[in-house]
Image 1 (cartoon, rainbow, N blue to C red):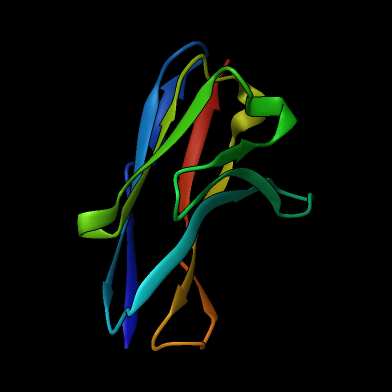
Image 2: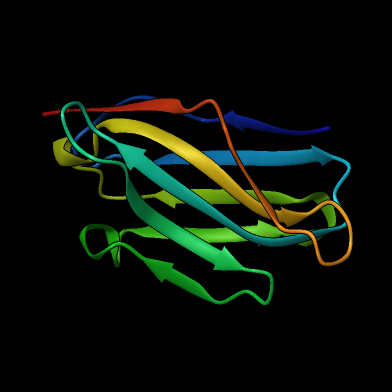
Length: 120
């Protein structure tokens, strides 16, 4: 059994910062990638940022230069530092884990989501 625990959402004013954290625990042989997605009301879920097992990162165009994703491999934790937040960043943010519970087996797991609200 693998679990994801997200934390760090909340209400912030335009221009402010928030830090989201997601910790994975359980029967994990290898974490392959971790990512953050978001879904605003009435919109499709979109990639915010992703970090591979080797530390390579990619970001959604709308957050480049403002958000930074990082990971702690020893603790299977991924952090999303969000700066210069805008009302358009308001959404439910989901952590996604790509992992192997054993060799040559690949699974994904989504967190429960954490709400980020940016007031104007």
